[in-house]
Length: 175
Image (cartoon, rainbow, N blue to C red; front, side, top):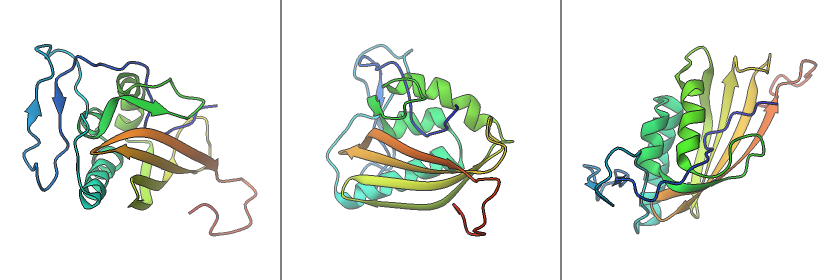
């Protein structure tokens, strides 16, 4: 069974060049080299931020990941390299594998991705989305993604997925 979720992976890259997420206090998204290795992917390095800044960072992540559908950039700016994935059908922890796994899905524009609701509070962000035309589901899928932050970066992800039943009697079901 294939389950789409916004975060997955297999490899933590501790020696990457890192970038801080843009915020009001860092609008230029300046890059801070961790080492001289510039060929490796880059990921978010946590830094202290206010709860309001966390909320702004989460909104920017949702825009980049779900709306713009730029997986690599969303991970570079907002996800820690050693991020923790709880979805049992996806590759294990780490950002690099997530980017590799999710990029073909999100770059396929025949797969519909629509953010229906989102919220943030207490270091936790959530997104309720509708996904259409994704194998193996013949009908729309509702996904609730939950993201936990550490300072300025997403560090952990959970999701709940449900396909719209063929015999649904509630016209408001899932969406």
